[in-house]
Length: 148
Image 1 (cartoon, rainbow, N blue to C red):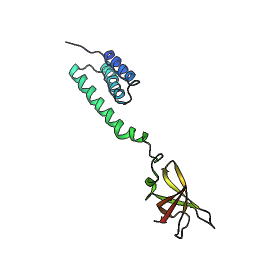
Image 2: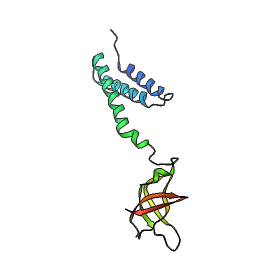
Image 3: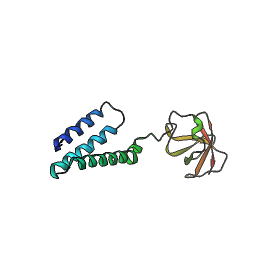
Image 4: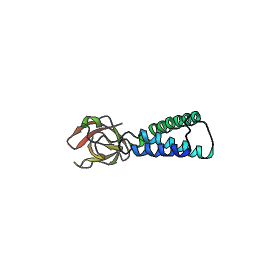
């Protein structure tokens, strides 16, 4: 019967973590981390091979699930840079500078839209600083908005 000792798991874990350098998925990393955890546990707590493999499976699934649930969403690009101008229509922003005497006003989005969070705008509505406005059209490098 094969007997795994703690250093077998540590070598497997380090190997899987090293394999992640050539894989773009971040999956092998979590399997490797799980193997290292099992190796460290085995150093202090004797257990059967079946329990070791079960713990490795549980930790691997758990680490991978935590990655997809909590860490990966933080790395996604939340901007609309590179997307067509139509993607900004119906977005809502806040007036930070009022249009005065032929000058355009300025609005700010909570997240960047098409690579910028502040945009020039025109509006036919009476606006005050801090008003929420909704984009109805894109005209050149500025937006047409209405009060929302």
